[in-house]
Amino acid sequence: MQVPDDIFTEPDDINPDTLAHLGPLRRFAGIWEGHGVDVNPKADGPETHQSIERMVMQPIDAQANGPQLFYGLRYHTHINTPEEEITFHDQVGYWLWEPATGLIMQTLAIPRAQVALAGGHAGPGDTKLTVSSERGRTDYGICSTDFLEQAFRTDSYRLEVEFHSDGTWSYISTTILQVAGQGPFQHVDRNRFTKVGEADLNPWLKVARNRTA
Image (cartoon, rainbow, N blue to C red; front, side, top):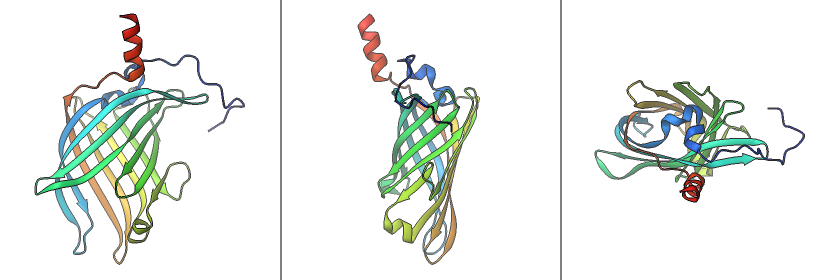
């Protein structure tokens, strides 16, 4: 990207209504539930699990890096399997949209000591989104604890999202792992979500509306 000469001055036209300025991410806003499939590596070979996933996506106030402006959603996903009570997967992060460039980003962090920043581009009305990241990149990269680096090294991550005409949305997540003693493994997750709750207002908009009430 081209960095401007003035890297400090923030935009003066930031809008308090995040939900109205999320571009292609607007369809994400809300609370979602779905039943999916996970294929992951085990000592005896790939193992498939049915998954029960709950995804909460709430708007945040606009964020600025000097002149760069993002509107976004904070998300939390929690996954269980029918056969276990303990959490199967937990993940938090942000979805961000830069209206000026069409840049979309997903940040993610999981409590097995791994984080990533995945990026892509999309238009405001797009119904398909793709973001990706690669190990070793300093912009859209993956960072893991030393155990994961040696035992289950993550080389790449790609998430493909599709918004459907019936109001649901689905994803396919493909992660390429290097499993110690086994070699490369394609770890695939997929799910389709139905909305079970609406999104809240972002904090700044709540304050603005209360001031004018």
